[in-house]
Amino acid sequence: MKKAVVDTNILVSASFWKGNPFRVMRLAFEGKIEVFTSTEILLEYSKVLKRDFKLNETEVQERIDVFVSALKLVKPKNKINLIKDDPDDNKVLEAAFEADADYIVSGDKHLLKLKEFNKMKIVKPKEFLERIK
Image (cartoon, rainbow, N blue to C red; front, side):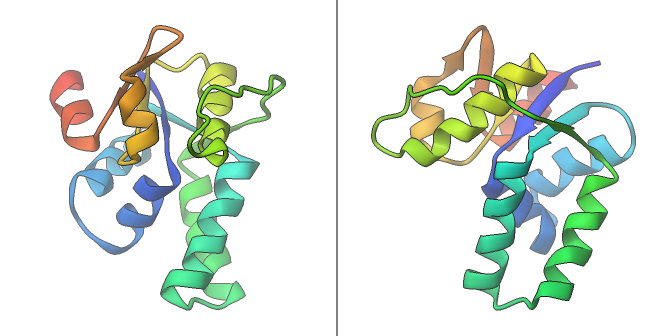
């Protein structure tokens, strides 16, 4: 089974729209892929929902609870400082390294620019879906 870490922007998109990020998460809910996350990624997701979508604490927690049922939580032991332009994105690499993921699925330009990390492919949701068919 393929293992992936999804970036915060994938979780946000899957929460509100039925596009490719939603399809990626649906595969996790169906048990066809393993999707990993970390507390740091979920905290950022929570912050974005409050700041950009004006959701209250209860609404945010409900969305997190739905995702947590399909996500596997990792606790990264290693700090990675590879992305200098946006050091906050390193948390995705840390989670992927800890999960020993096959893919990082993201829409973030700093992550996508790497193309690969530790033999993991860094791809947009559409490319991920095409690769795992």
